[in-house]
Image (tube, rainbow, N blue to C red):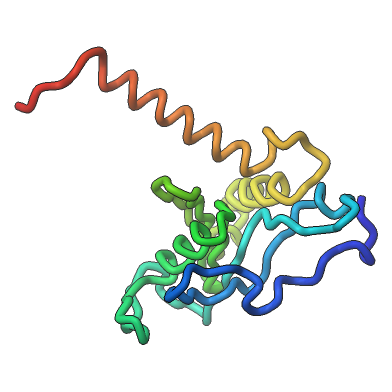
Length: 176
């Protein structure tokens, strides 16, 4: 386990490179890869980027166009940030919902939304446990990489692709 002296500070503003002409808001916080903290140069690779929003902000509603004319929802903005920084996992929270986003570079994104209200109820304990398990696996250096969240999501994506290929069947398809 890394000592607190070796843990890198939260990413500084503008710590993430954006392509020329594009400017996405930087994340509110990020989780560093604990394996990199023990390396000689202590260069942090980010495992997860998170963005917090004002209470009850609609995660899917498009905002007014920015200076470039881009109108996008908070989810779309975080997905773009994840792709641009090549950090495939993100969290978006408005205090009412927590959205786990998987947006690997060059692929379609996916997400799951956890409702805080349900996680505070007795019947919602399994939901809270699932979120805890997913995030604990993401940030823990105690498990092999294939069992961490990034590995699980990548394997899930591969499995989905294999299933889609099998469902498509052999040979080329003709239009109906």
